[in-house]
Image 1 (spheres, rainbow, N blue to C red):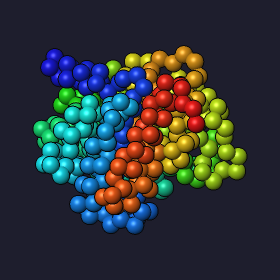
Image 2 (image 1 turned 45 degrees about the vertical axis):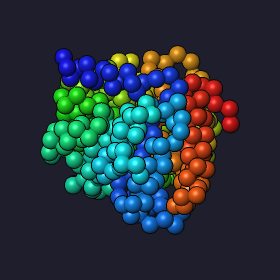
Image 3 (image 1 turned 90 degrees about the horizontal axis):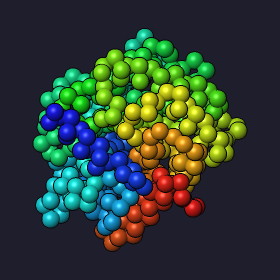
Image 4 (image 1 turned 180 degrees about the vertical axis):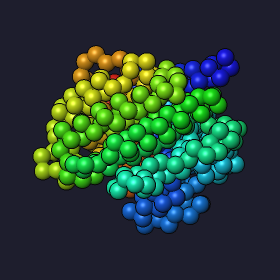
Length: 334
Ligand code: 13P
């Protein structure tokens, strides 16, 4: 009962009208890539400075109800010594933690990948909980081609996502289940829709097998989009209609909320798509954002690693968060 109450109160704190999530959980390699675009070295101090900047943005809690952190950040402190998870919580932003340990090639399935991190997960969750984390995230990745992902990759990743989600719920941590169908490649929107439907169907089948309580989890899918290098790019309305149609076929209404990833869309595209999705009529779940790049790119470009740019960077983040908050209500105006 205590665990159920903890799960429900975390869901209630996160799922709020016009609010979404900030994904700031880049692993060591990924944050180094992002910093390279602004000529900043990825040192522990620079990562601390950047994530302190994000979390201390005045007013961010108006549009962001949760933040996904990387393990290192859970143990870091702001300049005044306050732990970063507590700085987030003081802004009304629930701290969460990425718990997968990344992806590797899936054996006997050339071109497919599988996400790792189940061994020892229950023990790690206890540690993260003590550091203030109330929810978690696990990302499965699906490469798309005419033959990928294989049936094996779809099944193996669904099974891992479901095991992760069950372990989290047992620990009183709300799981975010994230199957990302990549937009890299030259596939059509039809192929993306076909793969996404297959993947999501398999994921919810596995969640059911593992008795995951849908009311106490959040779902983080990719949108249905053509591959980046496909010749005919889709219009905003088409992306919205295809995305909502696939979600409607595969995601039970009991799921507490759907929080999209941005996956390489520009900040403007990610907002416009979310807005159009929220204008498509009656849907059973709240549909909002859990963006990494689409929220962080503008402030990162404003910051460039310089203390004198912190204010401008925070303004850029707040503005993007405000626009996505509006998109989550279907009233974004580019
Ligand atoms: P993007 O929005 O940059 O895709 O990041 C979201 C995320 O959490 C990926 O795991």
